[in-house]
Every structure is written in C-alpha cells, then in structure tokens.
Image (tube, rainbow, N blue to C red; front, top):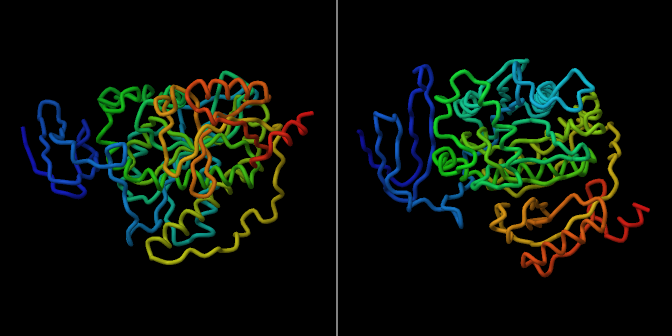
Length: 415
C-alpha cells in the first residue's frame, strides 16, 4: 500500500489500463491538504478525507475561468458506431442513430473549421467505427480539450415524444432521466472487457464514480451555459421543441475533465422528427445550431479569460440564406413551479417528489417546469400535483415554436 499527501489545488491520479497500454487520468480538486492511499491488491487510489471538498450544496468547488481557459480545442463525439447502431427509429429507414450522429458531427466540425480557424477540432470517430466509451473520454482528456460535445438521437416507447434536449453531468440518481442513462450507457455491454474497463461504474450509484465527477463538477456551470445556448439555437433558429437542459449519470460526461454536454437531436421514434433528422436539410440545420451555440460560447469564455467586455458580433453567414423551418408541433402547456438564480439539480427530492422536472433559462434565471402537456386539462392535473407537493404558486405557461406565449393564445391556436 502506497500513501501520498495531496496539497490544496488540483491533483491527478494516473493508473495504467489493465493491459498496460494506456494511462487513465483521474482529475480532482481539494480545498485543503488531505491524504490518499494506493492499494496494489485492487489497484485503486482512495481518498482518506473528503470533507475538504467544497461546492455549494453539493460538496464540490466550481472552477473559475482563468486566462488560459480560452476555447481552443473542441472534441466532437459522434455517438455509437460500428457494431453499435444506437436506436433504429421507426424502422422505415436503413440509416440509424449512428449515421445521423456522425453526419451532424462532421458537419459541425466543418462549420467550426471554416469559420473559426483558430479552433482545433478533434473527432472521436469520423467514420462508422465502434469506439468504447472510455476511449472517447481518453481522447478528450489526452487532447486537453476545452469542450466535449457528444451527439446522439433519442428514442421512446411513446411514438408521440418529440423535441431536443441537452444533458450535463448529474450528481445524483434521477428516476426521470434514468432511461436516458440506461440507453446511452448500454454500449458498455458491447465491449469485450467491459467488466474490467468499467469496474466500479454504476449509473444508479453516484458514489461509485466520485473520482470521475470531482473535476467534471467543477465545470458544471460552463457545461450548463453551453447546453443552454444549444437549446436556445434549436428552439429559436431551427424551430424544434425545446425539452430543456437536463442532468443524468452518463459515463462520457462523468469522465471527461472539461465542460461536457450530450445532445439529443430529437426522437427517431417519432415519424416527423425521424424524417427531419434523416434529411440532409435537417442535419445541416441541427449542425448549424450547435455551431452557433459554440461560437457564442467561445466568444463569451474568451472574453472572460481576457477580462474584456463582451460585445455583440454579427452572425456569420453560415445559415444566413437558409429559411427557418416550421415546427410540425402545435402549442403545448407546462406548469412553472419555481424560479431560482442558481442551478438546482432536477432530482425528485429537490422538488417535493415531483418527477420529470426540467428548466429553461431567461436571462440569468433558471425557471423550473413540468413540461410537455398537449392539452390544458392535462396541464391542470399536473398543476394540482405540483400544489399537492407544496408548490402553491404553481401556474400554467405555454410554448409555441420555441417561444413562450400566453395560455389564452395557446388555446386559440389549438382551436
């Protein structure tokens, strides 16, 4: 058994893979000196003192943006690939999730390289190759990436489900998003040595991945910022339904040591969205939305790092001549239950037991809602549940084509 003292600041655990071919780096931050031991029997480091870790309400310390935190390297991760097709949609097309995610990833990289030549673009895969989850994380960590973007498509048993959502790291298990966690982590079981590669990783047990989360939690604010920009673009420019920024236990978000997001472009199990996402036009629009969000995020982060005042810049001509598409969906209702200036993790325990809470941002405020009701009657039932859970001020809101509208206007449009 080997021991070492860890001083205040950042530290890195480095251990070889089982086959000795690669190093796995585990990054963390401590706010005071603590100790760690290495056990040869299990080949694991263990922190002896965790009480010094600080993050408001969560036990971690948020990372401050510094001068060397400009966005110069982005890793684009096309989900699935090779023997892992991802979800197969409605079955009407030969192409599957792995094909859509790759096409959008390559378009995104192309737009960045053409318009932001100072940014280095790295792909985890640029063809139909099977890549293990830990390899995707290693590529990003070893490249010293400033942002990790993983691109996927959603699926649901309810064929009516539609819309876009972007995930950031979740610090606790949330039942409402557990299906996404199972779906995106399931590729682990296609790997030959998954029991060795992912020893101790359990999406249902957040404590089992605490080392991976130490660094990622420090980047949570930046991850949420970029995720919000992505959803803004999808809603306002591409006219997709905005299902919000969410949190879930996902391996590629837990074990990447930089701001990281996982984007669900839409539901291939929904006929309208499948048609859109499998069209060349749809893929171009989705990639351009992610690119525009990246451009805005880079502008913001670079300005903070330089200590400059952020000024508005004209939009690039990337999709200037592309007409905005009409969303096929009618207005929908939601129940707003809470507003906060801070990000509150969307687990039921934080919302009186309510499941399925999401949020959208207006300015610097996080507005928490129960979303996705096609009728006012369904929304009123959800409002009653919210009030029973203690949210006595819960009220109805409505959205159409990505914009908030009055409930009365939504009712008129539905007539």
